[in-house]
Length: 166
Image (cartoon, rainbow, N blue to C red):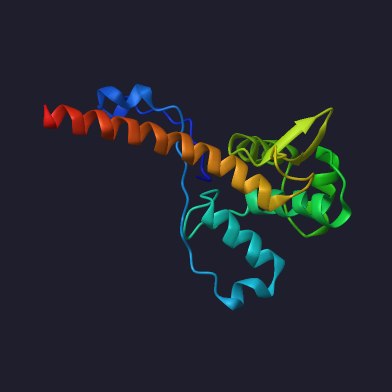
């Protein structure tokens, strides 16, 4: 699910492409013990798993923003502002500017992971989860989108089965 895309499919030449509302990428990755040795490698693994980055990605902006946000949400249990996130990223020796940070926050919002209110950002809260519950956030945002897409595909499969059998 992870990568929610709003890219245009008009150039593809498929007439149904205009029906695409969103795209989600979810990767089933091995989780070797070496990945869990550092927070940074876990953030990278999670972002790759959720399609926020591509395999072999060299740009780290979204990772830096996600890491800073998770620091505030999970370690400090606060909802950071853009200046807070910028300060944290820079303290981690990350070269990111405000425009790039806001761009990555928007990508995280589109993926359903982050919400913002009154200039503060926080993990999207799942209806059945607690505040700052990353697991519940993932299950809700990705599960809902995948469930919806799968339900539509199942409905089409039923109609297609009926069409072939009649």
